[in-house]
Length: 250
Image 1 (cartoon, rainbow, N blue to C red):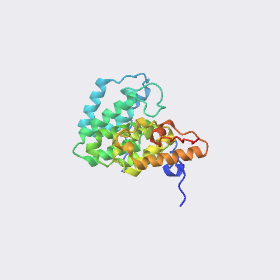
Image 2 (image 1 turned 135 degrees about the horizontal axis):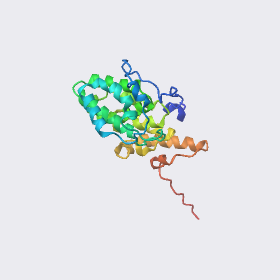
Image 3 (image 1 turned 90 degrees about the vertical axis):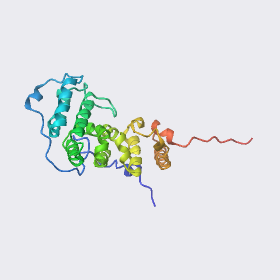
Image 4 (image 1 turned 180 degrees about the vertical axis):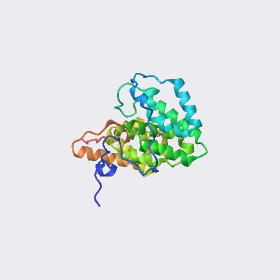
């Protein structure tokens, strides 16, 4: 039986939809989150440090009335705080990510007793969000894990189908431990393809990093790269067998 090529194994032939940063999962279909009030669009984005007092007010508001996150989440970067420029590197720390994760934690507290509604709200934030908002949802899943359980694993699969390194990296936080072993190994391999540093993969420095099947897959990937004259990413080298020296008899 022929072995699938490296692109076929990790779905690199599936392009992300234009402008979204990824495909859309079969998330619960609901209403799109309402956007911020018109005055917000007139604000100049100079708030590069989070307004902690406003953030605390928004969190209290969302905890008391969880549906408020539908307007607050998309407006967070503009009204509470954002890092300058556009996120370009996977794993780049952004003020707006921290703000949105705080809002998600408030949502989790507000819906702690209603996991299904929490899941619906999280899915809608991802489904109707732009790439930055989707990244923040993925980063926040680990903070909602106790309440969500496995309900948001499909969002990880959606992010991992994209070729956006920022979404792939965000999907491989602590919540990614809920992926089945085969999907998790493919996700690690996907990181090598799209340039996500493996240091960003939660748990890879623990027992999971010693997974023999993962090592075999990385070795196959490296062999394919070398066979066509391509360089093997440095991140792959620790997973490869140590070279053996050949001693020539005189």
